[in-house]
Image (cartoon, rainbow, N blue to C red; front, side):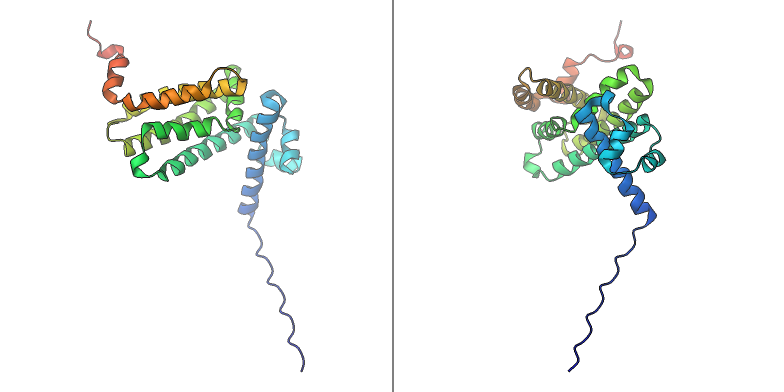
Length: 221
């Protein structure tokens, strides 16, 4: 009997140009974040990023012509990823465990992670770079809006966006300060977060209204 011929493997479908472009851009952005963490803003160069991403210099300049373009896109990418991560992580929390303390815990998990060092590098660089500072502020507001929307959705006691914004401003100031302490190796950041989680149960809109003065236009002479 003659044996049946072995069927030839199906050729792999060719990737579209959009797929290849997205893969290259993602590799460059992740490499930029890694370089910011490892070398700092000043030590990050387009050549180092291209080598890290295993992308040719021509391909790198085609997608992001300058270091500024690379860093801006990488920080936007990182903040979008953090906002999505926070949303997905909090969605998975059982409904009876969705407290402000748990939200703070999820936020701390993001801010205390290694990639947040890239954000701090760019924040510091933005002090003397107006364009960079505007971008950082813009993407940070996007993350804050995501968290505010979740607070309003899951916590009826947070009745409006103004109250949610106040809570988030306080939480971010604390966790970011704790993150700087942790990266610098000083202070007691874990203790600060633990105390803040305990105090979060008392952080209601009524308490906020007592602690935060109204805008000047609302104050009577």
